[in-house]
Length: 117
Image (cartoon, rainbow, N blue to C red):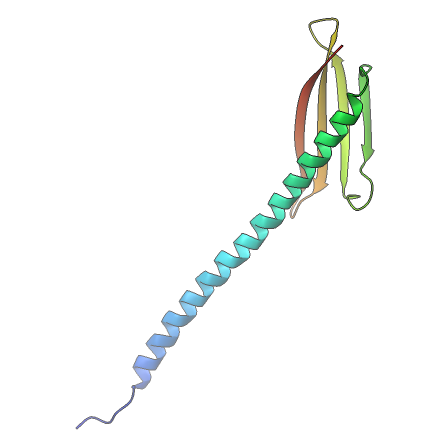
């Protein structure tokens, strides 16, 4: 008659399966958090960039380059705007690039539009 309970081999196999499952779950959660942080950066860059373009289009913009930073709490974001003459004399091409520090390198988002008199 065999004694009741698990053998050492059965316990080791169960622990190996459990540890593999936990490592995969940790990887999925870690990647999810990283993706969520990067998505927040892109969202803020888009919203800040759109606001800056709208601010510049209140009046018909002059051609040229300008740059700056965003106010608190978004000091980590900066922008550069280029306004150039479009094909029509009453239109300007507006290109705004928003820069911010990503996890490994600087990220950027380019927004473009057309200003018309």
